[in-house]
Length: 440
Ligand code: PMT
Image (cartoon, rainbow, N blue to C red; front, top):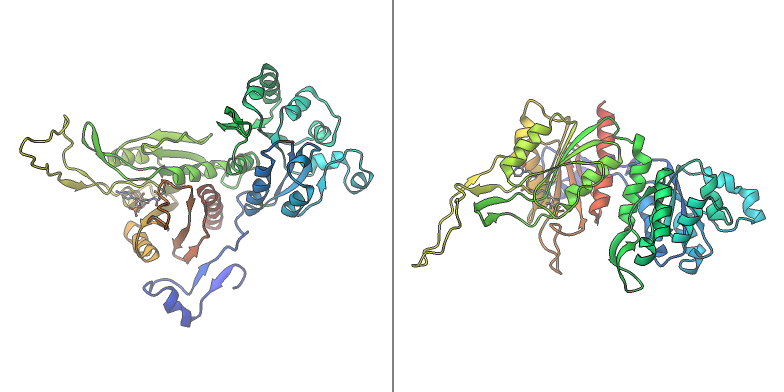
């Protein structure tokens, strides 16, 4: 191991790269914390009192993975739900809670604390904290800090659905929004109190993405244009039937979200999925592979192309104009398939080739080996290989929330650990920024 570069001796070369004779002796290994979409940034996390406070602990962990440091203020109510010790263990910092602590003031005054980070995040943001900030109250450390800060504030509200919908909370939210406070969530769902509706705090990965977006307004990919594809394509057999696959679009959408968070001007060409467009992304919906190709060509030029879509390799030669009926003599209709255009190969070899062309490889066997061959065959710079066979409990990357990928490039192979699709997106955005910067 040498400065993040994993070197392989000729003796283990054969084992690791058995059939990859063109690959050099090393693969770049970025290390567990070496991918920073928004490096050297920090947040001040204000944790209000709510059952969702436990999710803020997970948020701290996820931010640390992205290289974003957290310092926390835990309100008195917040300390009823999580302990200062657990917050401190995760942030690696002292936890602040008392406005009148002489020790704290001597170490770091509350004014300094309010300005020590690049962004102030309130999670959970209770109705009380929202009201205090909207009304300019300053009667404890959290509210004083919110009043004194000169940084952007992002709130992740969490409260009972009736409270969230009450006129006073709505009024406070409108005031805060007018004052430039950013919001993420709340989400709709079943609440800890048993009621259903909007009020659940956004999930840690959603808050992390919103933080990256807030921090990355002048981000690493500012000035870069990105084209991302996601989801399956549907190839009609007749007006009611089609050929498709299990892609949910989650991975491609997460990549688009991360690219926007890093400041890229991002267009997402999506097959039919049940997801909403990430904020800030220009979304174009398509159905078939041919439509996807046309939409991609119309969206060029772009600096980066990420083909995460599971494009159908074949389509029925002729799509019937009316529903194909079962025949009385039970003769099964024959459907002749023809090959779809290979969008990735066409764009990678076309006159408006993006500077960085990234394809995916969805494999069930010989995952890395097939991806290495695919990279050459399709003319991509990078291929991201993922194993799409179902695991022991029947879950698959297709449709699931997690992914374990291998990044195949001319430099070798990076094996990334199992992570959420949002984390794959964030880490990929960081690698893209690194690559483009190196190439500039
Ligand atoms: O959508 P999710 O549920 O989140 O699942 C994510 C995913 C598994 C779909 C995604 O991570 C993934 O692997 N996408 C690529 C799926 C695929 O079509 O793989 P492939 O090995 O068949 O194709 C290789 C590459 O060529 C891909 O970049 C694909 O977009 C592209 N391709 C394929 C066929 C074709 N006609 N045109 C293409 O451009």
